[in-house]
Length: 200
Image (cartoon, rainbow, N blue to C red; front, side):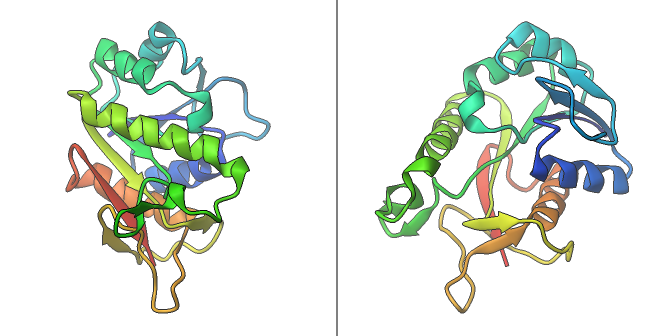
């Protein structure tokens, strides 16, 4: 497939690029500014908050994967660009903030969440609301509470709207296995117009 990746210079994006290329997909990276290191794919400079410029950058692709920070994006603009460009699918690397930590309590509402994390979590919440209100073919992938560099095992559990934890109460996933799960969903969609979550 031809895949456009918004936020192509980020840490999770590097693993997405590697996974997409490993499986034979053609990737176009989209970023606001040039990368400090070579992302390994053609990079188009476009502002995610300019719908016409973004539409031009993603036109002709089979799907758009959004791996950009929520605080720097407007879901309405991205969805407008998607429609203008005629790109049939959007897959979003979400966060854990909108998952239920316990019945009736979202992760974002827990008292121990650092204040510095809240703007990004609220941005993810707004993005998910915008997707649900749209007519796009969307998927929102919420990773575990802790995710970062690690191994590419291809082993993960699937969940829905509740934060997944292991037997020790930990909720974690590597960037590499997040990428694996996202590309699995790209290739064989099981969560059209839905959110799903993953963790070990």
